[in-house]
Image (cartoon, rainbow, N blue to C red; front, side, top):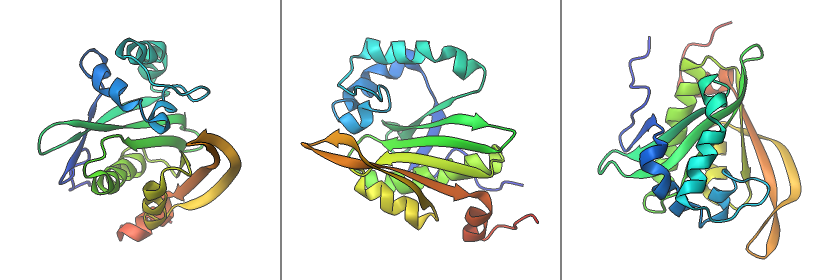
Length: 192
């Protein structure tokens, strides 16, 4: 039985998407091309609010069929929207999925990423009952890479020179984590 709140931490909470109300805030984040690449992976660029709205409308069928799960992250202190958490590539028969976790607001980013990652992993492993999760990120997200390693993730794939940002190429990294490893690290009982 889960005794810890699933969607709330000390500083961050996971909430549902509301494209009618949040697209302007999300559009503001896309000035950072690392964030924009989650909305337009092939050609990231700053997006307008109506383009974010179109992004969600284009994925409505996937959202309704539960092939992709979209969540927003809010700071509990002032209810400010600070990022997003997405689960995609869900393969229930294999108990695997990919996920994205982005804290787009720079204020308190490290603490928010750490807590949001903890909440996301609880959701993925305890609620969705997945066995293996993968997160893809560019090498430009220095702090997140360290947080993934601290959480027990291992580097599965390094695609050299796949991302062009800030006048040079960076590697695209794929980090994975098994449920068993995560549960042991959390001190939870591991099923045999």
